[in-house]
Length: 310
Image (tube, rainbow, N blue to C red):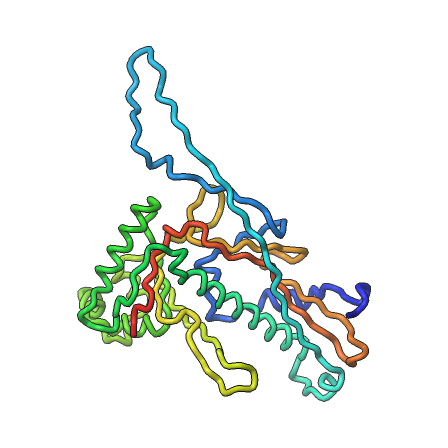
């Protein structure tokens, strides 16, 4: 391990990592980032007292009925996530001028951290032990199925549980391709325009469902062990998630998920890049780190369609 005096935060490479935000990652969509100053802490959770039926009648001279509302707390802990790679002097010396090995390495490390975070987000958002409102095997690849009715039913379930009308739907790429070919979707869209399945965009699908936005999650992962033949799969599987997402996460704002992000000396993106000399290995070590905790803070604000295509 290098001496502490030899390790420093590389601001230039940190900026590279922050600026480099590759497409195809959607963790921030379901778990909006919330920068925090401590690695662990508590946050407040309000009960549903504001929805309770109360007797508010008051006779002249009588006291108003006194109510009681409750406030509880939950906790977060921002786990550290980091990956590193050495850039040997020999490799740097042999590299063509067009290459910038430090930047390339930083981007690759950032990509991998983004991917691991994406896999974690998908795992949490599709956990039926947490997301209690769900329908399994909706079979939306079958024209006899009723995706529009299913979505309308889920909307009402979320609104009844939270008071918020869901405004977004996240679908994996395979689910999106099946939906845009579904007879009921094509039929609804063709009320306003003639459209072939390939003409039905995410925006048109959102319109068909009466939603603000449809997010097509097309992130992929390689599940094969290192050195084995590639085995590619969709991070978000064959699932769809209807949910309420506020314009911004803040105090007294309902949201399905939150991503507590410990800045730990970094800026609001949370990424930090360190570089130090490994003289015994004749190279420079680059490490990218990020501290976060993705939590489902209001499970009732989402409805999961689990395995909705075959």
